[in-house]
Image (cartoon, rainbow over all chains, first blue to last red; front, top):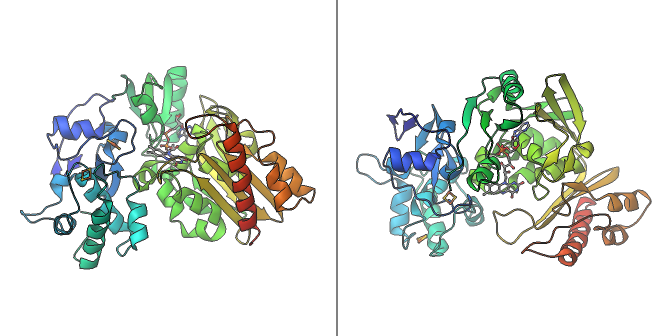
Length: 154
Length: 274
Ligand SMILES: Cc1cc2nc3c(=O)[nH]c(=O)nc-3n(C[C@H](O)[C@H](O)[C@H](O)COP(=O)(O)OP(=O)(O)OC[C@H]3O[C@@H](n4cnc5c(N)ncnc54)[C@H](O)[C@@H]3O)c2cc1C
Ligand code: FES
Ligand code: FES
């Protein structure tokens, strides 16, 4: 598979979850694990440009796919507009949910470049913030959308 | 948690998947989007010896006009159903119900065939299929057959689809001008319904219920009452008749009975344009 633009090959046990392959084999530990029940979204990455919970996908299911993790969002040391907006709007507190939020939010804007506030909240329903900082997260996503500067998926 | 070990077969065609099922028998399980199966495997509630991955069968991902019905490939993702212009025009209930499944990341992976094959009484799409009086096309060693929705759900997580068969297509009749409603009651946005209700009013009215028994079910008492001329109040009063609602942390039988009555009433009112 291609991960953050780099071709990656390896042998894994079929039962290896994509999130474990990314974290343990590729040492891309920006993608977090927050639950056992596919509910929290901390593990969200893009597969083929779309948000996916990487704890609910086998690594073998991603064979040949284009995968992007939070590590692949910044380009040449410059933050992705969504990352910039999260920073400016204080869209994070402890930061645990943030990588997943950013991946879900960019996928959302790729499908709906000008969402209403309600659409942002619905679009992020699969991502939980244990610090409950939703207000500023939604603000950040709306700012990134407004900025018009490619809030879309990588 | 991590699933138990299994052998993995990536099917390159529906026929190859069927051959793998025939070869491995009871040990084998199809995997489409994996969004019901992987969670079960992570809790070791399912420990299949062989996974036959049909997730890449892109020729089974389509939404086509079949004349009097819309034909949807079994591997079509929930997101594609939700955003289909054809379905939004011809079968708006189904597009809407797909948008109510889980969250966007779940809808990017989960498939209509997988959801219906799983037959979870708490899931949304089987209820829509029942209310629409749709059917599924199933392929097996003996060829193809069509199973009407009303004969599909046979027991808890059990369907009339045999272990050596697979669903290849889901068919829903076109109902462009029909009244319809989907009422999903839950506490958190991404959750399954505590109780749900789908209604389609197209001449006669068909109502189905979510999470009111061991399988997705038709609200037969309501449908019979409506057929013999009952009004919305009288029909919704019998919403729970003949059902076996589950009891869990979200609600007991009494609570689910009351919810079913309220949701059926809302659904009938909305479907009749009220
Ligand atoms: C966090 C989360 C929230 C969810 N919320 C909801 C919700 O609110 N409402 C809801 O309805 N669902 C919900 N789901 C379930 C989701 O809709 C699943 O995608 C769906 O139930 C199963 O589809 P799948 O393609 O992932 O099937 P899989 O998990 O791959 O398979 C499920 C079962 O069906 C069988 N199967 C799959 N495809 C076929 C086929 N073509 N022919 C025969 N058998 C087949 C498999 O062998 C397996 O037994 C949720 C899932 C998650 C992870
Ligand atoms: S870790 Fe994947 S959803 Fe929680
Ligand atoms: S910022 Fe702490 S979990 Fe969201």
